[in-house]
Image (cartoon, rainbow, N blue to C red; front, side, top):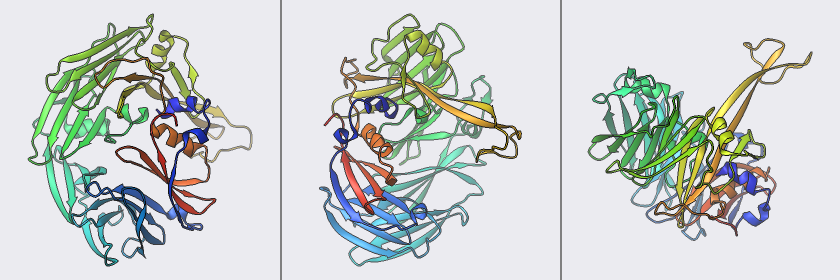
Length: 463
């Protein structure tokens, strides 16, 4: 969506697309913004919204569900002066626990803040970095999850932090068979080394540069979905129950294009698997039911066809430049064949929004003028040359009903589109954080000009 909104922003002013300022809090970070961190979070039980501002000290702002400031606490950063703020959780009493990570000390410091008494309690959790490698972390249902890959055993370890207690759960993938793109058998760890896991943000739009990953992790309540698309023939899906540690494997064959070689990928969304396969002459989108594996809808597009289910132009974007329209399907398929392909699916109250496309990179060596050497020169670059990386994406948008019916609706910007555009056009914004609530999204940021921390509301559609 971010790519397409760059085109929309040329037609509609940022003022029209920005929305309500919900709150502002005076804060002078002076020259410490590079060493400052900010985290926004919602207590999903009480729907209170918290802002944690970490600089020389820690400021905790607690808002109610209507975003009125209820409480403010300023406390010291004792024990965590040189550590990174990576997440939070909420106990049953409503008080927050913050998680501070130190790769040097190989530990996480947990500090629970008792807001009613302005006191805190710290615990140290030692991370087993010799045996395990960190993969990702996230918050879900007021708990904090830290996921690691085992370096020796073929599996994953999940640490679930709840009410100040860390519960360790091991997910064993050794019974399953894995094959790479060339159908050679590999171990689970080898597959992840070649295709690192990318976490999908649940309930949010995930951009192309994330969904082109061949290994995706979807976080659900007490459940994980892991999809592997390193094979051209199938999507290997693992449904993981975090309560009983049961792992169920499901296999979904990729749709077959008329000619090889092809590229393929998938996206899991609400008990459906969206699979895309393509080459320079054909694009296939297949939507399968998660339970039965049966195809619910299939679209096959050749280079001579018009893509009937697109709701935007066929677009090519290079770096952050203005996207340009590709003149026909043939040109689009040629460009798409040079990329890592992917599909993203997002749902709001009205519709499903699909982004189909791919991302790629070109590296070139450019002759440097005499006496000139760019900042990114290194010892491995010949003295008379320097390298330039060009990032590009090709894509189009599609708007569907929730019953998987295509529409002719004009693409309207989502809240995320407007947030990215707002950030791009306001250079005074630093430390931006996005928090998605049930009916709207909040952009929190520090304003260099006004020296305030601001919460601004954004919703889908044109104002």
